Image (cartoon, rainbow, N blue to C red; front, side, top):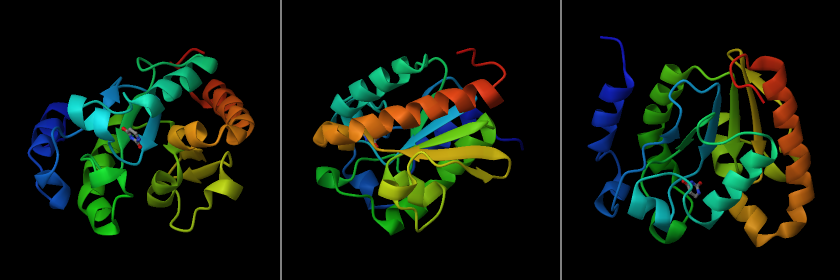
Length: 190
Ligand code: URA
């Protein structure tokens, strides 16, 4: 049977595929438009996201919303998901075994969405989605093509909160994303 957002979400919400299920308050499935041309991928929920069940609602999420606004985007024009759907304790990096257990959900979300552009937020997502040896400091803002989808990675908003010195580079990357959206997206209108 063909996959659907309803079936996928229902199955995902019951997932106990790794140890993170035991400590979650809420599973964080995703947010945004299910017909968006742009998919943003973070690493995993933090405390606020775990509490609310919505991705990027804490401090990093507020910065992400501001970053999107700079280039004329908002949550009605993108879809936001994470590599892992449940919060790693103390916000540690998700383990490979946790990412491997969870990545199938993101693949199904991506197959349903069929985005034109994927933006990885930070190193963990870039390694999981673009290439295993991705180097965020030297390769952020570069474009890669995988199966006809344009992909890039930018610094994670949490990294930009910790180190404001990275913000000028992030601004350049955002402008590059804006140009790419204008080039390849037909319905996003920015
Ligand atoms: N950081 C992430 O990578 N994802 C979220 O949903 C929130 C913070």
